[in-house]
Length: 217
Ligand code: SIN
Ligand code: FE2
Image (cartoon, rainbow, N blue to C red):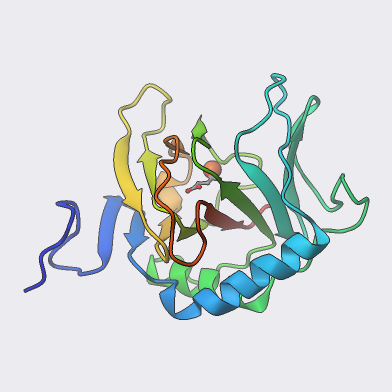
């Protein structure tokens, strides 16, 4: 028997951490596709580089972001929204790489959401000290589709809370290759990421790349 490093892995379902009724971590699910995924990140960032956007409240995000797919998530002084155009280049966001779409559709099905048809992918880059405060993903047009989140590079402590900001959040370590899926009754759960510690990853160094694949339009 293999012992889990963390007590929260479900021994009846190895490789799965159940976060809620319709939310799960699929440990290492993306590992077989890492080369394709990182190639995809390089293609995206060659056209639409990572940048630090401003929140409506006037803060500069510590996480740098870009997007691929028909719709990209943006923030500025006027608010949060999805846009077909990268405001920095004035051009459409890069296409969503096939590997991203395939992984997301398969992971969604594995988590109980068949027929996922994503049209948007937010790519986040964390450096040591970067954090993402508790928030809900609610700029999408409807909440029928799940969110599929893929982690690469340095580990992070993911916070998965309840439907209210004040609800206590579970702390879930996420590692290179892990995929989290939440949808259905869990679609609007608050979530965030604790400030990243510097634990350089053999392949990606002192960064963590996370992408969340969504149906936004
Ligand atoms: C997000 O909520 O957009 C990102 C979550 C993560 O980085 O794990
Ligand atoms: Fe989010």
